[in-house]
Length: 233
Image 1 (tube, one colour):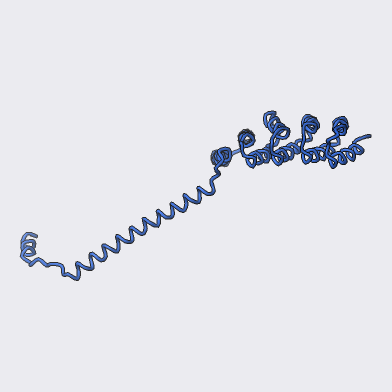
Image 2 (cartoon, helix red, strand yellow; image 1 turned 180 degrees about the horizontal axis):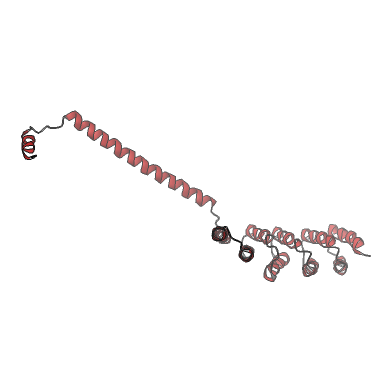
């Protein structure tokens, strides 16, 4: 039935596009091409800006990169834990999660304390304060930092971290022993103040030992004499 119709359509003269139509077509094609190139360029520029921003914000020190990586891992662990345990009790899982958090904090603190950068070691000492009850490894690292670190500010940060655990008899005893190892008057003054606040009479002997040193800083000597009067019964 459609054959005659197709035959008649085939007899119609072919209509050629006008020059004006051709110009409009190519103009539209050029405009579309320019828009696409602009979009690609904009996306590229955006990626370049994002990469530059990340490069500025991302820390250069490997230890701090490790700290961020551990934090990301911790966040993922917590999110996964909450999703898995939503709507049901899990006291055992909560306790396990707390242990994992403590282990991660311990790992970050120990890693930062071993870096060559003094500012990173200060961060490590500060980070250790997040640990509710540090193990012997962390405590040993903090006392080694207090006694032997070449940077006074790092040693002060370690002392500040250790004072949080001065309720432990072992920590108080080591703080008293550390006093005789210090040569910086600033560290000596800080330790004398901390030890005096502990009201530990075991410090009396160490105080007398320091007073025998003829080269002892005058201000340190005066503070020790004041604190001795407070500690003596």
